[in-house]
Length: 277
Ligand code: HPA
Image 1 (cartoon, protein in one colour):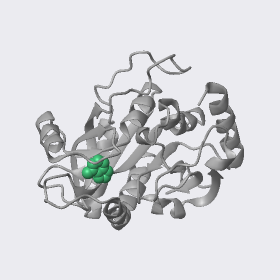
Image 2 (cartoon, rainbow, N blue to C red):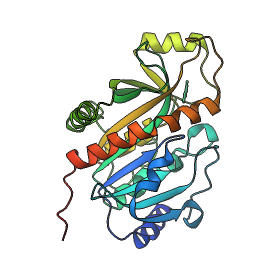
Image 3 (cartoon, helix red, strand yellow):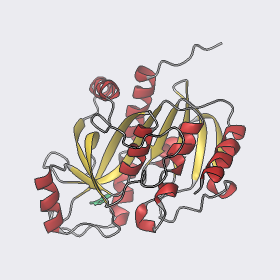
Image 4 (tube, protein in one colour):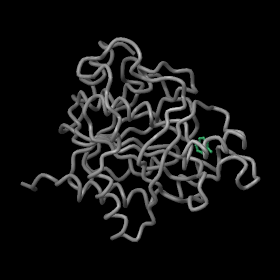
């Protein structure tokens, strides 16, 4: 994905939305239910955008949905690009750059992840407090994109204020919400039990194959970031059961209601909606 393609794609999406989005929301595997809840929804399919190939994984669609949620103008991404598909880093993070070009100030990432901690069984929601980048690559390698820094700070990649809002919203709504560290691995094979032991030693609470490249890119562009994992399975070797992608999709769908309530609450409390005319 080169800069010209990105700018053209951003212009195309902007032309199809009724208003500029303020918050970018990325939907993980099996979590695309929220896209159907957007009001005044305008959809743009990847097929209509220069440089956006169809995403290859079952359960991932390829489209942006613009509109409002809780009165806040949002842009949703359903269908992610992952390194494990063989995509270039510039494509994996193109949707974040596109959203940033459209003017979003914050990004809320969701993902499916395996749980390493005893109190993170399948079905749990975990807010990311920090991450471990174990993918062996960084999306910012190479020329510095306009509006990005060479050496961006990652001390507080996950916005403290927004995390506080999420915790309050969850408390009020009775949604159990944990906090922890997300380890991003390359995939696509799931981990071995020995690798999961290693990740525990390193301080990981959940493991997944996405989000970190997007968070790094969002931060270098000055976006405030919030991210939440849906634990879809016990990480390898913890339950003794083999891991299956279908289980990941099914558990993701089951958690949709809680995640939706969390996202809505954060939009309502964390981003004061413009007054209705
Ligand atoms: N490992 C890596 N990625 C994942 C997992 C897992 O156990 N579950 C969902 N995404």
